[in-house]
Image 1 (spheres, chains in turn orange, brown):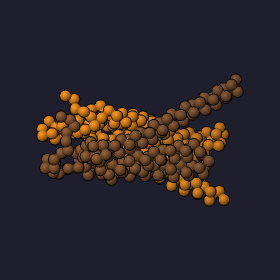
Image 2 (tube, one colour; image 1 turned 135 degrees about the vertical axis):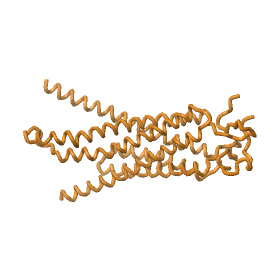
Image 3 (cartoon, one colour; image 1 turned 90 degrees about the vertical axis):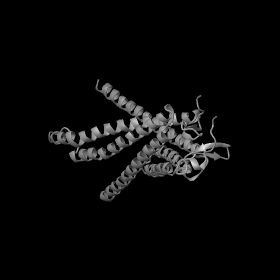
Image 4 (cartoon, one colour; image 1 turned 180 degrees about the horizontal axis):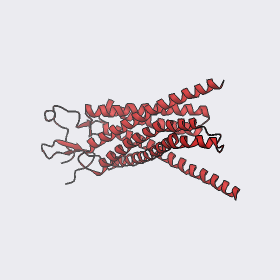
Length: 163
Length: 143
């Protein structure tokens, strides 16, 4: 007999002892939707992170090496190599944050999806998902605060330097 | 038969809260997370609220650059993350509605992810359109 969802399923050990909790269909629908968008956001975060990392490394190494020659020949007098290097280096930390956050979002999405598709381990899988989400939120929040403070500091320094 | 009745104390002396508890409002038995699980959920609640608050502050700062789109997007996302964090905190701080509160939290966080995904896709499409427009413009001008 198929046990009903939304309740603790009885254990095979007997005595009516609840071994695990199974989410019902409406709860599974909510979890599946969250899983889908967590994974989508994870993929987007991962892809943008990898792209930003590649661009950052390219800008900091290849472009910076190529620009002095171009500037000397007069083809790109407006581009300053130091600016390109700074831009490239500044992209690398945010790219790494994006990649790590993306991995955690993907993990949480996979765990949430497993809650829906498997039976018998709903609560441990949900806890895995919550743990991954917590780490992703922590990384993102700290990175955002650091970027905000650094950006604000650079903005103020530029204002002061301009006057 | 299902659903099973509430567990009897002597069977679970070490962890009595990690089993279905009576929900007086619904007359049903709803799962109650144990102390270890509550610690994990509490951590997620804290960081979801920190992220929500940070998004709102960063969004408000973007108004200094007259960036209304970023402000609105960050404000909405921040509100959803704060809401998700509050629902997760309610899982920890209340009894009898843990699963209901958890579902509300997942729904709010899921909506935040959905908004982010849609906003990113719209931004990428706009970027391609703008780049395509400039490429077309300069190609026609050169020709």
